[in-house]
Every structure is written in structure tokens, then in C-alpha cells.
Image (cartoon, rainbow, N blue to C red; front, top):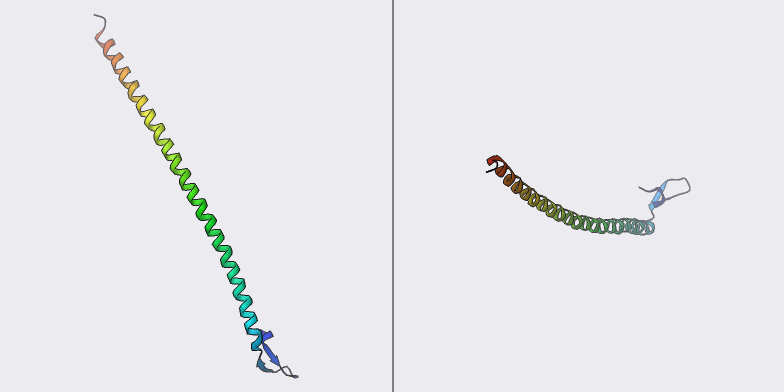
Length: 95
């Protein structure tokens, strides 16, 4: 119990609760918590936006890496084909 809510007599003994103060205290507490909630919601919105952008960036990067790997695989296959042709012609020797 908040001591400010207690009305006391001249001897310092509690006589009553100051109910008129309770409403103001509850309103202040509500406004404080509501402000915290609004700040948290703003942070969540910002984090969702950040995650969405990072997801988009990651998808773009993965697509680029896949394209590069495909290109390298194609070049490797071409290189292996030309090497095989060279090995075949040198293995049989001059004719």
C-alpha cells in the first residue's frame, strides 16, 4: 500500500484511504504502461521491416550465387569436354 493513499489522524494513526488519489495513480500507471506498449510496438514494426529487407537481400544473394555456380559448372563441363578430346587425340598418337 502506498503511504500517500492513507489519511492519518493527529497521532499518525491511519483513519481512511484517500480514494480520490487512487484513480489518478491508476491513470498514471495506465498511461505509463500504454506508452511502453506503443514504444514496443514501434520497435516490433521496425524489426519486422528489417527482417523483411534482410530476407529479400538474402534471396537476391542466393539467386546470384546459384547463377554463378551454374555458370561455373557449365564452364567446368566445357573444360572437361575439351580436355577429353585432347586426351583422346594424343592417346591414339599421330597416324
